Image (cartoon, rainbow, N blue to C red; front, side, top):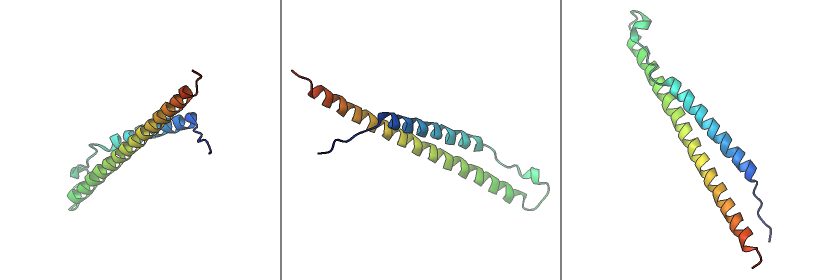
Length: 101
């Protein structure tokens, strides 16, 4: 029977990278919030309100999408941490079970 091998350093590096990326997506999303277009910036154009509404909708959509990406990456980070913790626990139990009595 083959013995499974786990590279805990690689798992930790992956978890750390995912965590960093989650923070970066969150920061981008934070930059979108409350950047609503004021119809007055378009002068007296008849479509000023529509353009402003479109800018507001785009801002809200961008914010929501980056927030969703951050949440998903946080879940991935948590899952990687759980896998790593479980593997380390099993490895420790196996090591302890092999000690001479």
